[in-house]
Image 1: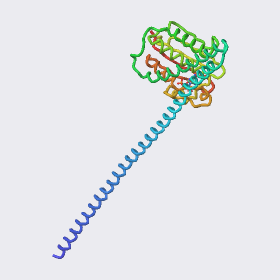
Image 2: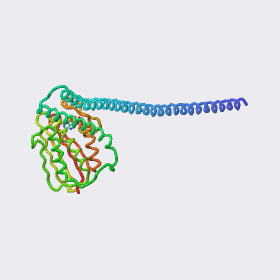
Image 3: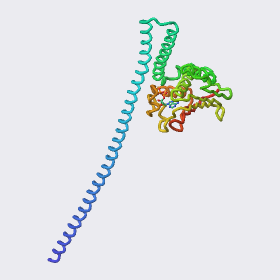
Image 4: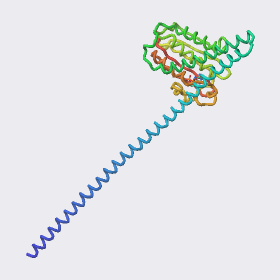
Length: 294
Ligand code: ADP
């Protein structure tokens, strides 16, 4: 009877200890599971928060840069509008308040006319940039001879900067015709020639080569200048709206950062592509444009 009691006692003790051991074990597993789950959750949240912070910082930096570009653009546009207006006003005041001889007066008229052109050009650039995202319907499509567009654009820019004949050299191979808006295509090349002159310090030498592409279905235009060049980090960015290279040589030249944005929009509207290449600062720039051919 005693032995039975003792046996029961040890049995109960055994069961109780086993129960406690199992409870402890399960509890330990459960507790650890919670910790592991908490750890995993914590890691996920941490990763989410870090990602959020990184995205936020990138977004903020981008906004700050955009704001700076907008400010620079506003300054540039204001300058571009103010300078010719101030100049025209000065000449008008002089003409009104003083007797000016005939040759001088003619010269004044020429300067005022050039200033009005500059003013019109800036206003047109701003208008074009805000319109350039519009669909094709604004285009006046017709068959265009690219050689004629290149020569007209070269003549406009040569007159604008009083360049020697031969400063812009055009070599055209084959019959290069395409469907497009002649006026818009002229805007493309006037902008590119204008930049090539503006961003060349002493020697203003521009060469343009237009030829059928290897497959013959496209037109390749290669426009080379021997100017200040573009740092490699900027060759892609220069096509963005308001973007201007911030190097000392580029800073000396006034501009709005809209020209190449307009150029790229027009080229793409025509189903073409454009990119820039430069061996670096002071080593010239090459623009490679590909347009569809008919
Ligand atoms: P803008 O000339 O009014 O500043 P663009 O959009 O025409 O604006 O050009 C953007 C930038 O690209 C310019 O500020 C200049 O730094 C650079 N760039 C454009 N064309 C040339 C070039 N031919 N040679 C060197 N830099 C150039």
